[in-house]
Image (cartoon, rainbow, N blue to C red; front, side):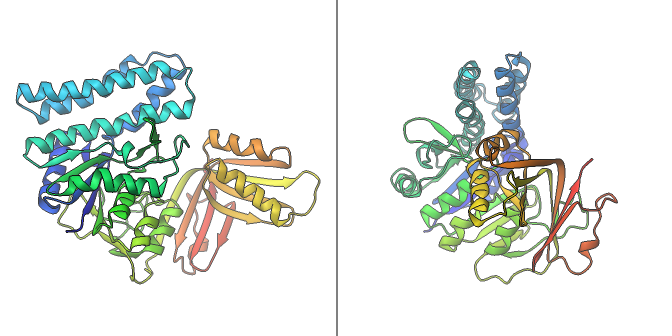
Length: 424
């Protein structure tokens, strides 16, 4: 029997009620053996851990924030396990993870920032997976908890680990596959390991990618990502209330949506699934009976107009200091500098004397890119921008205004229109 992979994000396990609901979904929609479950950190735990690290590096008091995070998890234990003996056993397990977190915070001031980030922030996934594992064991599931850092093997690119595919495939076959015979395997999303005991992370929201990788290595029957929305929608309903469900998407459609910033699926998720033609289902944990969205091979390209909004974008314009014309090698150098810094280029325009790039406004990575190119180019910035990407735009979308504002940059291809607006 082929495996099925389920992935549950932080919103689905944000509290005791959510964890109970996940247990029901695994029972009703999973399978008793050959099932792999990938889970993210509870609710906003990753944000809280990032904030704790920031406070520790700034040598500020973080005791209240740490206590709040501790209370979230221990309070969930109290709700989930009425038996005092069971409750104490689970709390003892949580204490070990919090002791490790305290050690990381104690090292934060002097450790390499990205390295200690991965060691500390990944603890969120260990906490949630341990809680879900304990809840499933309480319901008599035949389940094993497996450390993802031992099966998703990466290099030491902290905060954006590059997965070593062959090594990971061997680890999955030797460590995970035998546990599926007669049971379920639960593991953590978002994190990997270097193979020598050090943890890495795969980038924010990387749990989808974990699920896709495991499905690829196992040649799974399917992957299901359980979200708090009915499936993949034509826009964020909080922004555009008239958003509609997209019942089917080709791999190409889904890849384009994620590339331009649709957050319902992690950008790296599609490729490993497409390689093995594994279908992906996006379904609602609030309404598991719903059909959701199917992403797979041999599906027609959808024609529904789709809207994606990305805030906190930066327009970077580079011109050569000696006013020489741009050459292909110059363009290559600029793109390579951005890529090496881990910056995702949302939009690119090239003229005879300049290159303009729209990218995420993450200061640390921008600085890393400019260290390589600042001596060669004059640089101009526009910050606090919003990028609107419209797929299947039609004839009237070019007239779109954001809060009455005219775009400062526009670019249209055969199937996509991008409009860049100032947020100020």
